[in-house]
View 1 (cartoon, rainbow, N blue to C red):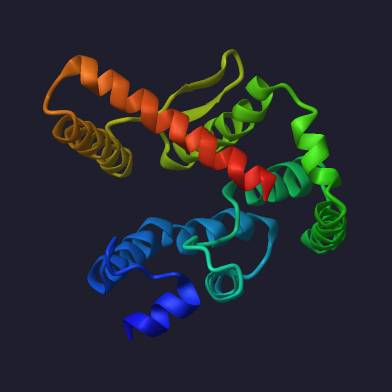
View 2 (cartoon, rainbow, N blue to C red):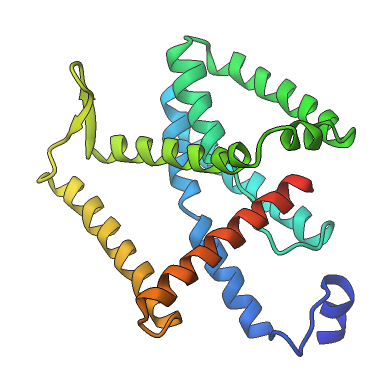
Length: 225
């Protein structure tokens, strides 16, 4: 078994084990599984069938991940992007008033153009023509956009004509559940960071800096690909 995995996937028994890889795969799935609920919820507001969206999200994610594993030999899980689906629903369909059929046609054409730009290496040249700070800010901006949508859907942030946004009814059970989840996530993240740095505040800052820099480096490598 190890020889087969080493031949096709570069599995190195000296660095990892099958048990570790299974746990890593299960952890990746649990981390990504939220898209099965969020993607249909976001795209469903355009009039698309949520059941079909759920099935499509699962099937496309599975196919893309298998291609990444069997063809590219990379341990990456792929699923629909949270930035583009929010832009599709809230901007193209709701704000601009286009139908979801029209928007899907645009997505198809955009995908074909994107493949062409990738094959000709034009995409890489476009990205690297931007200053490094803007390259890194792209991911940050998408994350803030998704976080803002999540706060709105949770009821923590609501529309206000005077200030654009305002604090929602935070004592509602559903809102409290979200707040408890956010606090629990923050505590677990801090606890893991402290355990990895032996409870040293200085080491914690260094650990976070190294982790952020590593994430930026990974992002740049993905852009190069």
